[in-house]
Length: 426
Image (cartoon, rainbow, N blue to C red; front, top):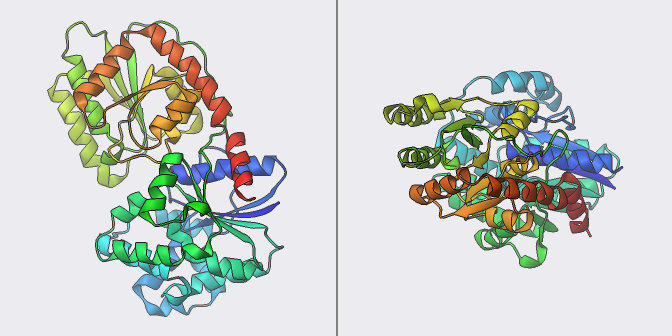
C-alpha cells in the first residue's frame, strides 16, 4: 500500500504527536508498505530514527511571511524553496524566538483552515503540484483537524485517494485561541468534515469527546490506540535501595501538572514515617515556562526540600530510557484531559509503574495494560496518599511494573498501532 502521511513539525521541541506519527510510519515501512512521511511547518524532531521526507511543505517561514505581507503570496515556488522552505533555514529560524501574539496565532489558524480561498492558498497549490508529480497514493493521512483544509485539494490532486485524519489533541490548541478565532476555526473544521473518509482517534475517550466537540459523525470514527517503538525498552526488577525516586517526565508546562506533583510531594514529605524520597524531573522547557518552573523550585526550597529535587532537562532517547528505568514511580498529574499519554507507555515499557489522574485516556490505558493506579484529579492530598502507598509497598510496585510491561507489549506497541491503522482504512 502506498501512503502519504502528513506530520506537523514542532521546531526544536519533542512533540508527542510527531513522535507518534514517526513511529507509525517507521513500522508501516518495516512491514513493507511504501510510506512518505511529509513534514509541514518545520522538520520534525524525534528521539528515534527520523523517517520523514527531507522536503517541508507549508514552511513556517513562508506561512509567516504570507501572513505579514501580501507580497509573499505571489513569490514563485522555486524562490520560496530556495530561500525559506529548506530544512537549514527552517531549523535556523526555529532556534530564534519570534513574537507570536494570541491574535496572530488565531489569524494564522483561521487562514490555514480557509485553505485554497485564504491568504496562504499558494501553499496548497505547492503541495497539490508535488502530489500530481508523484506515483499515485492509496491513502493520505492528515495528523489532526487543524490541517483539514488539505483534505479536498489533496483528494483532487491524488485522483481520489482515501483521506483519513487523526485526532490527537487539537482541542487543547483550539481552546487556547481567543475569540472570534476559536469559534471561526471550529466552524471551518466542521464545514470540511465531509471531505474526510475516516477520523482516527488515539483513544476511545478521545473518539467520544471529539465526536461531540466537532460534530464528527460516529460512523466515520475509528480508534487507533497510540503505540510506541519498543527498541531500547527493558523491564527488569528494580534492586532494593534506601531512597525511593518519584519521577516526572513530560514537557515543563503548567498543563502537564508539575505544580500538582510538587504540592503533593511537599504534603508527603511532611508526614511522619515516610521513607526517604527524591523528586526527579525531566522534560523539554520552553523559555516562557522558565518562570513557572523556577517558581515551583523556589516553593520546594522554602519547604526545605530543595536538595531532594533534580531537573535533568530534555533527554535523548537513551537518556530517557535510563531515566525511566531509574525511577520507582512515574507521576504526571496533567491539568488538562490527556488524549494520548505517550510518556505512560514509555514508563510501563521500562518497568516503572505509574500514578495518574483518573481522566482522559489514562483510565483506558491502565484498564488494558495495567501497571498503575488512578487518583482524583487536582487533589494534592489524594495524590500524596497514593504516592505514599506506592512508596511504602515495594511488592505492589513490582507487581504493577511487571503487569504494565507485559500489557504495553501486548496492546500498545508500534506493531499493534500499525495493525489498527491499516484496519481503519478498510
